[in-house]
Amino acid sequence: MIDDARRRSLGRGLSALLGEEDAAPEAAPRTIRIDLLRPGKYQPRHQFDTEGLQALAQSIREKGVLQPLLVRRLPGHPDNFEIVAGERRWRAAQLAQLHDVPVVLREIDDREALEIALIENLQRQDLSALEEAQAYQRLLDEFAHTQEAVAQAVGKSRSHVANTIRLLELPSGVKQMMDEGQLTAGHARALLGASDPLHLAQEVLRRGLNVRQTERLAKRSKTGPGAKAPREKDADTRAVEHELTLALGTPVKIDPARDGRAGTLSISYQSLDQLDELIRRLRRVPAAIG
Image (cartoon, rainbow, N blue to C red; front, side):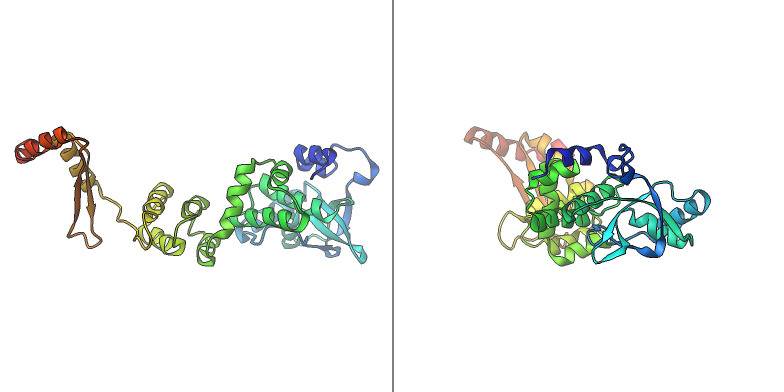
């Protein structure tokens, strides 16, 4: 579990972690040569946007590195340092051809290094949903966190943490679609629990479905083993359903086949009296909808 002092520090955000709320001498920023810094082994972010890095590099050329990096000493290499928070600024500073950058040196263990790196990226919304899920899973696996402890550490709800981790259950093909930006996290969550998430994901991309349509598609795919993904009804079909429902006084559903040339029409009734009334009305449907 996370002790109270560390939870309060994490809860205050990066300013507390960087020592900006602490007057202790060891928390004071210092300047370190850029070649003495190494990427953090617990960096949860796997991809850095090239265009964004170039924009940050231009800002650094004009104004310098405004916020110091958070670093710790690299084990076995006392003159080198591992970046805990601020790798994006370090990369951009290299593009800007800086020779040194401001840092805050702290004594930080592995567990806190992962928590801080995760929090920094979450606060800046830099992580993809999969990167966030993988970071949460590392906290669970490598440091024996509970989901409740992870949620407290990163300032998220336990349900958010649990639902995000579930994305790791998806097939590799679906996760690749997420990495490539073809599927959003909302699409992916809708596919969880489906019998064939990859097939449904391909269908979603082919038809350009939004998240709500994907949720309906996934729900209907669970109606039985081997059930095929249903066609999305067009506006004309829904209009005919509505007209028939009004004319007959009972729900009417039209389910087109995949070839669009056939299908089924379902009319519901709840009593024999309603069935008799339905039969009577069916005899005059043409007049009612014509």
